[in-house]
Amino acid sequence: MMLRYVPILLILVLPKLVMAETNRTALIEGCFEAIQLYENNQQYTFKAALMTSLSEALRAGYCKGVIDEYDRSHDCEGDWLKRARYVAGYKDEKSLPPSTESLLRGACQS
Image 1 (cartoon, one colour):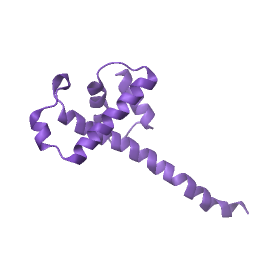
Image 2 (cartoon, rainbow, N blue to C red):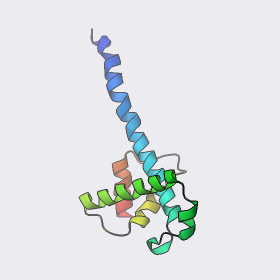
Image 3 (tube, one colour):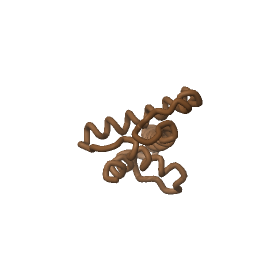
Image 4 (cartoon, one colour):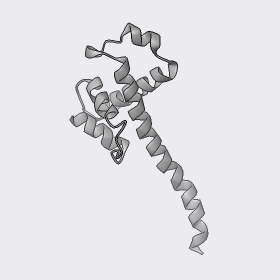
């Protein structure tokens, strides 16, 4: 009798699992774009402004927004670009942190 509820449970749970992975990978990709756009001391380069597509700029902005919001709600201070470099360092890694939260926590502690 309980077996008929299994498909319903799978339908409810699977999107959340996929969504969590997408958020983490989107953050990593966005931070990779952000560190390519900014030079030392957070100076936006003129060359980057000319060569950046809208989608790259949006991904970079997503990274900065997520890091800024995490900083505000978790008392994490310092250079956001340093934390973006930490997050972007996972771009080519085979094993990722278990969650976006743990990824941001590690970036804050670095």
